[in-house]
Image 1 (cartoon, helix red, strand yellow):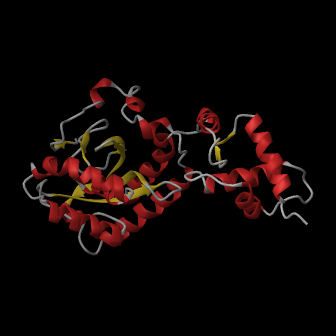
Image 2 (tube, rainbow, N blue to C red):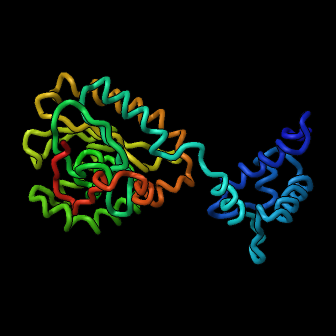
Image 3 (spheres, one colour):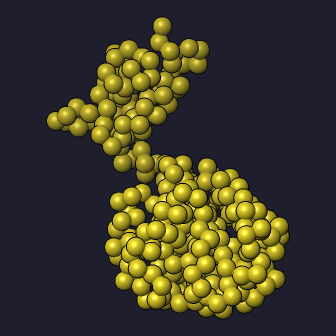
Length: 286
């Protein structure tokens, strides 16, 4: 008996096949391989594939005969959009963290070789940060939030960013390649960045990555505060709260959210006085 055929008709079969195609999207899949994956006969699997080909959702390579989901499929998924963009999803978390910790909370998102401050919730203490206000940017690797994003990029992307940004982070005077790679490994092992480099005198911070469903860092939540408020006794509590919120946000991230591709454009509706885009130096946050 075909495992996917029970009870509810062809729709479960189609979605089982789509999920199987997702799993082999990079290399493509053969009918026999896909049939085994979803528990259907080769004949049934072939008919389903041909139906999806006719709808433009699947394509077959003429030479290899391998099947893949089509560009049209992903375009349709993109058009479906997202009920809330990343900024809207994260805003309640920023407010909760700021209220719980009494410190300023930042949402950073990757933009090429940089991290952009997409949102922030102000705490009672006047602080300075690497990104400054909403819209500010800094090289990936500088500051706890940007470092936590860099540390959890896929290896090939991470290496490309390191090569490109090394000369930029060296301008801060305490970074070299060995130091940067050591810090990246430290963050990967602990799941957060909290090293105080002393670049912003009297300031301290913690950053944790926000990972999408594939485990890639697309954003970071970070705390910015005065050094006296981030001692060894308080640090574990801050890290735990940040990680808890980041873990809740990750599964809600839509892979086609335009904010992830063009974060600066999502800031277009902000008041002009908030859109500070510094070159990477620290600016007063309050």
